[in-house]
Image 1 (cartoon, rainbow, N blue to C red):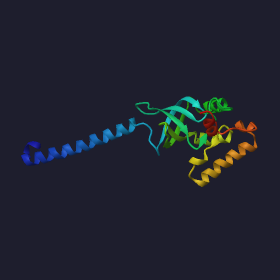
Image 2 (cartoon, rainbow, N blue to C red):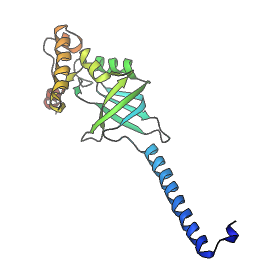
Image 3 (cartoon, rainbow, N blue to C red):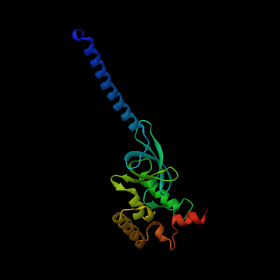
Length: 184
């Protein structure tokens, strides 16, 4: 069949075939780079939590070929430091909820230390909100831009205060940001 075509048509068909193969190769490389890419702001990923640093920082492996590992900080909350009062309990709580489990994370930002900042979901339940609800973390008011979300998070914190849950059992709990400044 191709033997009956003139050389000009063979050259045109060859060029079209090259263009098609180029686009197919390009799509395949885009797919694999997306598959191997580490976490990006604004995206959601599934990953397995492998380590808990403290009440608001964990390490997880993304479900991809490269098994991307990243440190992840909880968005909108500030848990006590490990050596602060209620710090170990806060870390134990989050460990019981997500350690060695699959979670979905929605990356909201990257902090100055290179950690991804995000909302962690386990069975459609926000672990960030759960930490505040159980009195294991403060609301990080400065980083919540949405007024309705801020009001909701503050209502969770106020409810935990009234019920004296977690760190609110103490008569004068110290915010982690204040604690870090005092211990510099």
